[in-house]
Structure formats: structure tokens, C-alpha cells
Image (cartoon, rainbow, N blue to C red; front, side):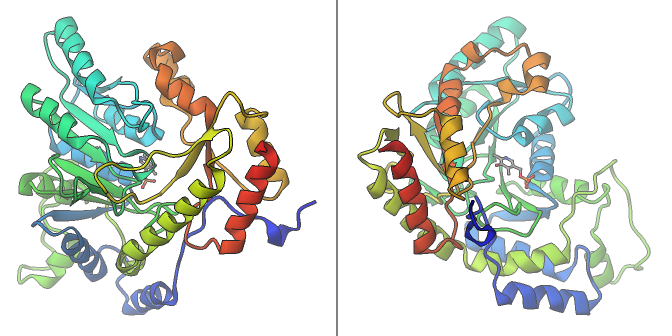
Length: 393
Ligand SMILES: *Cc1c(COP(=O)(O)O)cnc(C)c1O
């Protein structure tokens, strides 16, 4: 039996005294919901990305993706191209708007949506409906940036909008530029508890387009044209506001932003440590019957949100048994992702079959996500390596 103290969780947040002090300061301030700390977090995030990017803090990436898709004009009867190799949030926000996802298989070299297949699918949809899909929603799997030049070119040529689900991608670069500053209409980051930069729950919509930012700002808080802190700070009567649309309750709180302000300062340091862990895994596993995670091209920076190995046919165990044996040794692993076409809702609603997405299906069947987070010690990592070698050697 494994002693409880020896259990290595799959993920742990890295919260310092600065975050704790900031939360306490917020509690003492008397302003708990969206206020000065959210404003500061948004300003810090804008500075982090540079390039005049606008930032809108929200209650989750799911909320942010919903707002971003709505802002680019996705509505009932529209189609949105996306990957099945993702978390269900990516697909569900398309359904919120009464639109339909069109799933496109991944490139097995990157586990990201295959840009060549996007072209083919757009042609097929044009043929079938006389109308191209409205948008493409990319997911940077595990943090590895999609081929945004190829996707952007296709989208631009055929008149589709691009929204990036960057839930795994803080911070990452694509051809030297930070994800969040690329050629898409909007990019959405997640600060969920297991993500690299966390506020417990939270997200950020970022965009170069002031109209998209305005839409998200208004809709995140009931369709009210000014947020409560601005109302408080402005000279207009503090009780007065105007509702201009049936908005949502998607604002971030100052409590969450208190965490975000300090987490963001450590984003580069966190990335560096996770890269170090990934490098040590790569070296330790290179002779084993598994495929190592893909590395970025062009010297780009990978955030290593996930470290996913794929067992090969030569491995003496299957994926499920591998994870069981890791657990017996007190190490939690995970699987990213159960592709959407395996989930009853998506499978049945859109009549999806595994053969429709052979690469996503194959990637899933062999995938194991190993622990990769800054709270892991060298000793923790040695344990993981010893366990993996024990099973596969
Ligand atoms: C975590 C995650 C989300 C959802 O983020 P929340 O902030 O929890 O809403 C969306 N897409 C992907 C790919 C994710 O991993």
C-alpha cells in the first residue's frame, strides 16, 4: 500500500505568499466582485502581451469562448470548424449560440487540427450548403501552437473568422510572437485550477479589435453598458446604468484577480521550470517503447501545460493498464483528451464515428499525460521516471 503522503497528484497549483496576501488585502478592502483588482489584472495582462492588445477578464475560458464567438458573429444555423481532440468546452460554446461544430481531424505530428483538412472540409461544406462555415476555433493542444499562418491564410481567403482556444497556452510563442498577439479575431486563456497560471476559476479574452473587446465587456455583465467599478469611479450618478442587450453573468471577481496578478508575474518562470521537467523526461524515456511529445518548430517556446506520451505497439502493456500500474505506485496520470466523438452527446447529436477521425482516435488510445508542474520536486520526477521505466522496460 502506498502511504497517503507519498501520493503524487496529477496537478497542483503553485500559490505563493504574494497571492495569499493579495487575497487578504482584497477581503479587507470591502470590494469583492469585479473592481480595481480585475482592472489591474487586465492592465497587467495587456502589458504582458504588448502590441496594444485589449484584455477582458471573465469567469472562465468557457465563458470567454462563448463571448468571443458571439462577438465575431456566430449565430443560429452557422457552422464552426474545430478539433475533436479537445475538452468539451470548445464544442459546447458553439452549441450555446445555436451553431453547429464541424469537426476536423488532427495532424498526428502535432495533435493539433490539420490545416490541410480544414481546406477540404470548407470546400465540402460550401458544396453541401452553398455556404462556408463562419469561423475556425483552434486549440493549441498541450500548449503547442497550431500552424496559425496556414490556418489564418485559409480563413482570410475564404472569409472565416478565427478564434483561438488558448486554455493551455500561457505563455507560448508561434514564429517568435506570443500567442495572444497573432492573426486571429480573439484568443481566450483559461485560469482554471489545473492550468499553468490560475485564479481558481477564470479566463481572459484578448483581441486587437476594439469592437470585439467592447462586445465582451458589455456581455460579460448582463449587457450593462458600464461595469460597476467604472460607475463607482465616474461622475455620473452611481445608481444609473443602461442595459443594451440580454447579457450574461461572466465577470471575474477581485478575489480571483488577486491570484492572477501574482500568478502572471511568474508565468515565464513557471514555463521555464516545466520545460526543464519536460527535457528531463525526454532524456529519460528516449529508449522506451513510446513516442515523446512533439516539440515546437522554429525555436518557439512551448508552455508544457501537458506532457503526453504515446505507448507504441512494442509496449508490453496497454494504456489503461499502464495508468493503473502508475496509480499502484502512487502516481496519478491522466488522459488528454477523450475525443469529443466518443462522448454520447457529440457522438449521437452529429452521428460521429471513430473512423471519421482516425488520427484523433489513434492518439487517444495510446495517450498518457504524466505529471508536469512547478510544485514537483526533482525527487517527485525521479519517482515518475522510475515507475515508467519499471513498467515499460
Ligand atoms: C480547461 C479548458 C477549457 C475550459 O477552461 P475553463 O476556464 O475551465 O472554462 C477550454 N478548452 C480547453 C482545451 C481546456 O483545456
